[in-house]
Amino acid sequence: MSKEEFCKMISVSEPGPGDGGNTGSWRVRRPVIDLEKCIPAKTGKPACFNCWLYCPDGVVTKTLPPTIDYTYCKGCGICAEECPSGAITMVDEASFIKEEK
Amino acid sequence: MHVIESGNVAAATGVKLARVQVIAAYPITPQTPLTEKLSEFVEGGELPAEYIPVESEHSAMAVCIAASTAGARAFTATSANGLLYMNEQLHWAAGSRLPLVMCVANRGVGAPWTVWNDHQDTISQRDLGWIQLYCADHQQIHDTVLKAFKLAETVSIPVMVCYDGYLLSHTYMPFELPEQEEVDAFLPPFAPTHFLNPEAPRNFNSVTLPDVRPDLHGNTAPGYMEIRKTLQGDLRRSLTEIEAIDEAFGEIFGRSGTPFLEPYCCDDADYVVLCMGSLSYQLHDVIDTLRDEGVKIGVMGLKVYRPFPDAAIREALCGRKRVIVFEKALSYGNQGALYADVKSALYSAETRPAVNNYILGLGGREIKTQHLYDALTESINNEAAIGDEPQWIGLKL
Image 1 (cartoon, each protein chain N blue to C red):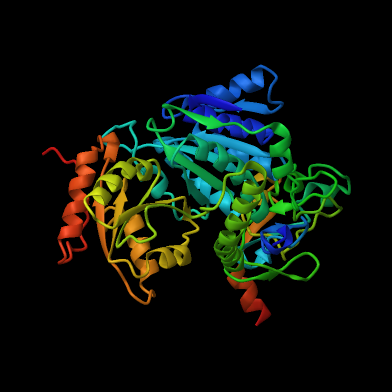
Image 2: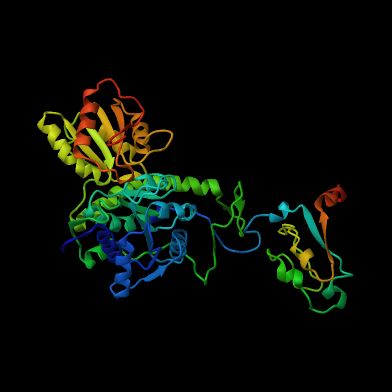
């Protein structure tokens, strides 16, 4: 019997967005950025980016303005906690479901 | 080369000849001098391996997991409570399908505190997904270590090489050491299919959700249940590999022929004793005495406990009058674990022998030949079943 016949299914994968599944579906509160308060958005300068730096899932972009990929954002709220200008608010997902309806 | 050495040295020389690349071990009780011998080999330049002393057995297994994931041939050893301290990492090693080899000098488990031999430590770890091999003497310890690496790397499943603490680990016996060239011919360098490689980064064993899900490229990746079913299937199919490796070992080293069960006086035996470890050899004297008295009895030493060689056991025991299972461990609240497994294997046999269960030698309680003789004559003469409750041998109170 050759080695290839064993160990056909293991957990090995190429790292990249979505390797952990559609983790955005886990979210109960959604971080929403107020661009009037957000430092890089407001000043038009690549500064601050604490949200990008602290996000444990790498779903915040280091762009003007910063954006959040809600497909994978789990809604942990660390970005809102770390934002020095209070520009990020955690909003109940239920309110968006009502809106969508 | 013919040597007289301890069981631990028999294991250590096997590990050295297997050209192990990483050894991680915790040096304090319940560790055995096996790892001291290995550190001597490394320090003396005889074994070009990384020897990593760690702060606990849990860390020892974690280091072995990391080393093996990086593509190295890795080894550790432990006993009793040290083995149990590894428990979570042991499951991880099996689920990760890493071909580690670990020696366990079997000892009782506290409380109350004991350091002496029984099999409770490894028996309590039978459901990990590891392969468990048991040895009856020093030659088997040495040979089994070599075969364990071959087996682990063929089927991608970690292997425990179990031998009786003190009775084998610390006693001296003669055994044959093979030449390095012979071992190299038997055991080629470890060539893993998947390993950590900075050129091609991979996630190993990241979270699985209850259902399967697509990977980055949209292909369906196996979920937890598929991966676990594969482990079970591969363990069952490992029985065929164990036979093939035993045969390949025999071609080079001249010792083979009993991959699962080592019988003594069993050809015409109506009564068969089944047990694991050095006890099967100790029983030879008792079998000889009973044979002199005209009793058709034999003993079988079981060498492979997981995967359980149920077909081989069924074939070996079907048609016998009575099977007597001697065990140095219990599935507390039920019966001896081996006893339950043997009965389960015999359920589909055409003619089922009666089966009795004796518990002995716990915490190193001395096993006297007279006690074994008395237990066997009791079992043989008691044609009415003794019952399903395990009988205890050698109790003093």
